[in-house]
Every structure is written in structure tokens, then in C-alpha cells.
Image 1 (cartoon, rainbow, N blue to C red):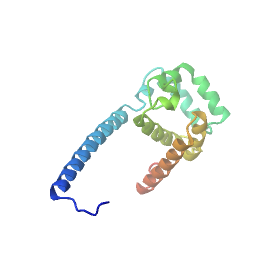
Image 2 (tube, one colour):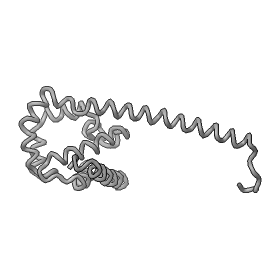
Image 3 (cartoon, one colour):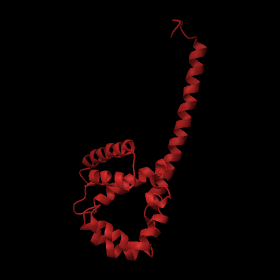
Image 4 (cartoon, rainbow, N blue to C red):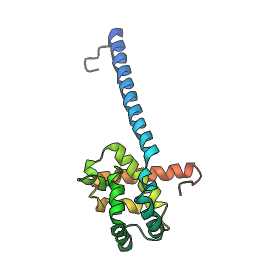
Length: 170
């Protein structure tokens, strides 16, 4: 303390009470955030299980698996997927294409689901490269260097988790 005085017991108790309220508020907000993530977990990509998406992914899933993410061939397949892919983006807000202004329209829950989707999608490609896909997507979606760095840091965390559970994610 600047004036070298000691706080009174009442001042200490008031500060502890304020901090306890702060902790409770953060806890409530974290619970709401986790509830939102849980809802996303339950609904993730559910539109792929119905028409018109299920038919499109039945045809293009195997094709995409054998392409390099971001390659010209990959981009051609995306164009060919047309209206069904547009439907997918419209019904799944973890895709930047869902928003008129791309990633700038997303919230943090969208971003968390997006990066986890990118990780899982990289595992579906024969030559999947999650870190490489972040670089491709940074350019594709105009991500700021700061956000791209955060996503790379998250990729490292996901790799650690994968190691912790015996490589199940790889």
C-alpha cells in the first residue's frame, strides 16, 4: 500500500466479499458458456444427416478425403457441392461462410466450435495438416495475425490433449 498503512479488518472483509461476488459472477458466466458449448456439441453438423447435405457428402466425402486441403482440386469440389454446401453453411454458424462478414460476425462460441471442426476435419484427409489448414484458412477468411496465432496455440493444445489420450485424435 502506498501510505504504508494496514487495512482494517472491515476493509479486508469488504474486499473478500467483493471478490467472492466476482468469483460467483464469473462462475455463472462460465456455466452459461459451457451450456452453449454443450448445445453446440449436441447439434454439431446435424444438417449433414439430412437432405440435401447427406447425399452431397456421400458423394464428395470420399473425394475430399483424397485431396489436399486448400488445393485447386479441393476448391473445385467445393464449387461442385453448390447448393447443398450453401445449405450447410446457412445452418451451421461455426462456418465463417454463415456470416455476411465472415469470421468478424462470429462470437467466441462459434470460434471454439470452428477450430475444433477444423481439427476434426484435418483428420479426415489422407494428408491432413491441422496447422497447415490454419495458415490456409487465415488467408482464406482474412484472419488477423493475432487470431491466427491464437488458433495455432490452440492447435498445440489439441495436440497435447491427443497425446494425453493415447493419440485417439490423430
